[in-house]
Image 1 (tube, rainbow, N blue to C red):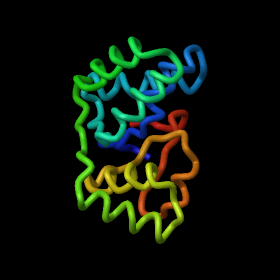
Image 2 (cartoon, one colour):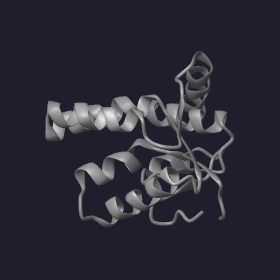
Image 3 (cartoon, rainbow, N blue to C red):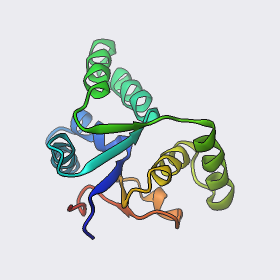
Image 4 (tube, rainbow, N blue to C red):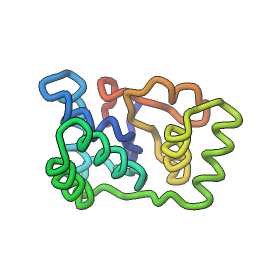
Length: 142
């Protein structure tokens, strides 16, 4: 599948930070590099900032979480999707229709709002939502 615009789930940003040396971390770095260089248009939710900062703070400490949060907030060529009332309403619909997790539903609703070609995530739970194509970090190729 050839794509030019993608939505990046929070695990794509988290993997390189906490799973250094793993295949997922390497794949995530490759994808983030493509966004950074402008090879693909990357979107993510403002919720992603919260997830990244929370995970890093829990695993690596407060100082690291502050540094990571600052770096993420100015990530080159990344477009942020605000968690608006419309996103929440669509996320609620996804929860009701597919039984998906609330955070996953916010990510999917955010991706759908931008009409991206795929959602890049290593979370297979997203596959339950028929309205969007999930690509793993391993399978993503622009």
